[in-house]
Length: 113
Length: 116
Image (cartoon, rainbow over all chains, first blue to last red; front, top):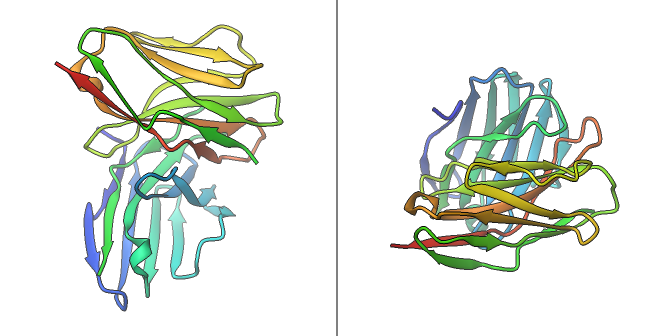
């Protein structure tokens, strides 16, 4: 049981489509994250939400739009994506700071046609 | 800015043998946290082991242990009695101890293959 659930697992979309990735955590955590994982590159942190407020945005293009309606849910809205946006998008959650680890979901494999 | 380097893109080990994955990092901070995550083909990142920089004692979790050399900024992972289920990508990660900064900085990963 992962505790962090991401849907869909796979998504194929055209560059003009609009879609959303969903993440839900069942661990009672107060922070959630979006990461982008591309081949042969370190995981790239995209967004951090702590207590439902966005605390970090790592220069992510505006075609990615996060939303955190409550502490258990995190969305990543996608529109007008580019082929280089094809990647695995991982959601994670954690409780507080310090040595508390982040718990990850299984990711959404996104392919842009 | 902190950086994490994993210089071994791929490693392989015979089943039941021991393997060590290397990780170095760069930071100007004196207090921080280090993690090793495992990502099997199922894609979920799973925490393997963690280390607080202020602790001199190396962390251990069953067959997994670390060799933490703070002065050298080195954080290697040793897997003893390797099992087929250990095959995965392994990522080293760094996290500051600053309150409110939740960011994890990851290395590029090491793909570990277990040879039966």
